[in-house]
Length: 303
Length: 258
Image (cartoon, rainbow over all chains, first blue to last red; front, side, top):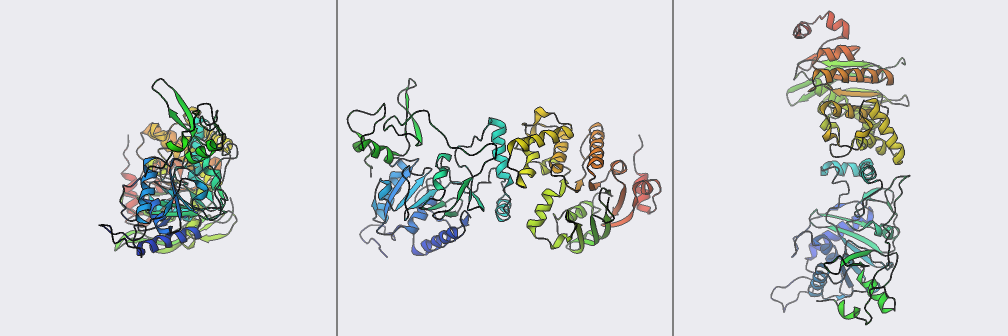
């Protein structure tokens, strides 16, 4: 074990002790064996508050090796507090290489987005999940929701979608949109926008989900069917945007609204910063892109 | 009606430790028949109802149900999945307190549609049309379809609960004090409605009540319970007009005359 003898406090490789990692790996393996099933695990205290990705960090810590290359995104961005801190954390406790480039990463820990660039076989996507139970807001009893999963009683999930249509005339759920995995378990894909749901379907990458506070791990193995729930007369559809990204001109990507001033000025830009940078480096630009290329200096990961 | 009963109950007992919930209850229920179970509080009516609806497992005894395909199944030997499926398709359960039987935070339409979605209906328009139809059958205005039951009066909630249970066309409905806690005029309307629905749909029902008037109006046959045992059973009119067991005589003579 690669204890760091020079530091004041010495940590095991990737922070967690080996017993804990074995325990989490067992949960992950079980999750992979039963796609979409929530496996309980003994979630540990992590040096960060619940809600900041303790589940995702534990999953990453259990699967990461010295040769891995880690990318961490928070709402698609590589440069926000959560992403920067978790990247710095693993750089320190596991001494692994980090990157912001989707294609170069072997493990991508994500909070609420799936990268725009299609993932490839061998990559692992680790989701941070706040509430793993898709039925929770309709049925508060855990004993009951577990039974509903066991008996495949998923009528209630459609009650939620029915309510949406009754109130808004369409399915208004835009994130944490429930999916059915491999025709069996209904799963909450964590609060990713439903825009990303189709990317989970038969993805060549392994997708792992960790919920630290709720102590659940679940998984979608590569090339697994992930189908968004819908009604025959109200089929599932993803969000569309009226305009392309203001910086890189990309269409058919997920955009964030950025407020520019206090006079109502705003722009829509790619939520996936790596994708946006890459496109700008390739010479694409949107209507608000600065003439000089400032992207590379602006987006430098701040460690 | 067929020449076979729908439900056969034999020597059913439920003990809570050394206390008796209900003991040695035996009866047959025929299709389209309404059976009232009456008695004072603590007499084991609700325990019996919960055992029959498989919400409780009895200590001993058997109950068999004739499924839609004509096969007899023993209720307490069925898997939980099968029991729950039966519960939301071929059976209904009307609780005394509508809040126990309804989802109070989703709209009336979704409450009625839930069973349809649970058995695999995935067409919004169809589900909604069925919900509208059922709301009108239980005399709830169509424009209340998107309101939550929290905004409904007690009588409306109870009618909504009935619609929610009947939407899958069940053959057997359990009712636990369906008119309890409602004022008399609302009670009368609800009883009217229930009587109409039971006759129209040919429902079999087991109604637990302490109100002999409800039993008289709804049921053809009745069982009187005391301390967990059935003390008298027979046609409702016979039991009420010519009670034989001393306890039934006491019960009948205790009705307040207005």
